[in-house]
Length: 155
Image (cartoon, rainbow, N blue to C red; front, side, top):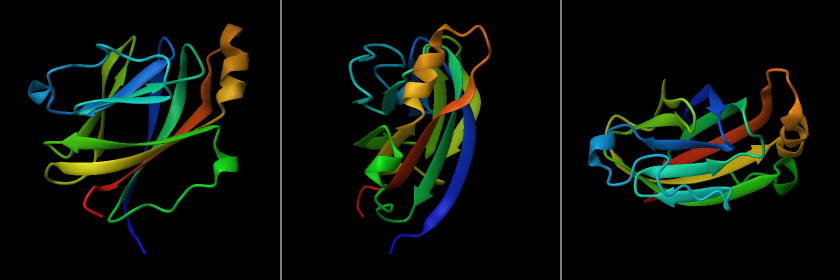
C-alpha cells in the first residue's frame, strides 16, 4: 500500500478560468505557461506543464498537493466534479504555480529532491458553486478546491 510522503496546501489565484503547474526550471521547457492553453479540457498537458481549466473566471482556489511513494488511493467519483490523470516530467523536483493573469507565484510544490517522471491525478470540487458566483462583486476564496496526487511513474 502506498504511503503519503508529503502534503502541501496552497492558495491558487485563478484568472481567465485557468491556472497551471509547471516545472520550476522553466529554462528547460520549450513552451511556457500559458502558451497554447487548451480551454476545452479540464486538464491538458504540455512537456513539463499541467494546464487546468477552472469553472470560475477570477477567484482564489485551494490546491492540496500530495506526494506518494506509489499509486495514490483512488478517489471516490461522487466526491469530485472532475477527475483526470496525466504524466508529468520534472528535472528539478519542484513545480511552480502559475496564474493566467498574475504569472508565476512564489509558491512551489516539492515533489522530490531530484527530478523524475511522475503520474498525477487531479480532482476538483466546488465547480458549480464557483461558476454561480461568477457575477459576484465579492472576493471569492476557497469555493473551488483541487487535489493533485503525485507519485513516481515507475510505480
